[in-house]
Length: 365
Image 1 (cartoon, helix red, strand yellow):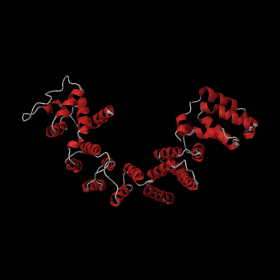
Image 2 (cartoon, rainbow, N blue to C red):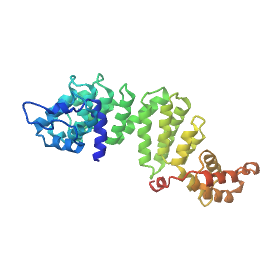
Image 3 (tube, rainbow, N blue to C red):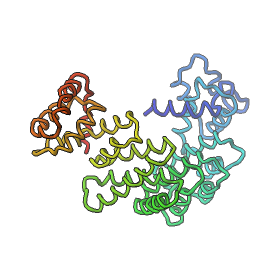
Image 4 (cartoon, helix red, strand yellow):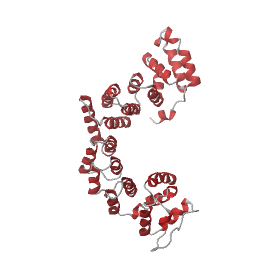
């Protein structure tokens, strides 16, 4: 955890000009470090942590002026460790103040988040900041992860953010809504999907992601309702694959399909002419156990065996060699004589050159 904080703080705070040895000299208070030459990060951090609250805050403010990237992580780690030295009023003022750069605001948002890791606080000024389209979408995305969003009014603001002009903010907002109020997020997502299918809605990526996550979380049920929802989701994903120019959007829905751990979704992606081989390999790799189950069935179906062979031509998997060989022996009529001529070579490639199956995926189902 210590190293994690160091890496994070160094990357953020070095960019925002944290820390200089010269800032530690002050005529009106005791000399803290004097200089940092020859001191380890641990020694610098220890002396920062020993400051009283007033002097500590002065050091942090001074450290924004003169950058010292080599030791920025020390000031950063100290700032996060001492987040409670700052009152909510102080932090909120630093976040909303136009005097601070976006980079500094980001730092104070993270400090606020450290202080309120349980999302137990909120303030009208922060809610106004979230709704202010003049503010950076990245800052608003960061802030909404840390403020309390529970009441009807607060959730209405989050729903409003799902309609923002910025794609990243929209995506983050609907996914956060999904964590807080899954039913609200699902209703919102299905409305977006319906509008997309009947004419277009630029929030489609987040909507598909929300429904896919919910179906993935409920896939152990797989009742008739689940199946209907899955088929509706697959229909819009098929539409995206066939008509959308954005490769990012296509890759996103392919990822969402593989989350389902579902045969139909796997087959749709593998058989789609609009999906490249790399993405097909990925979904086969992550859903190999579906092929294994079909091949190990008491009476494997010929069409399932044929599909498994198509998948192994794209991505040979060692662990499926024996199940496929057994299924072929059980259903010799699955392939014509001409087609069967290529199967020994395929089995050899699976055994000799195939990848190892991600067996933990099957265990985590």
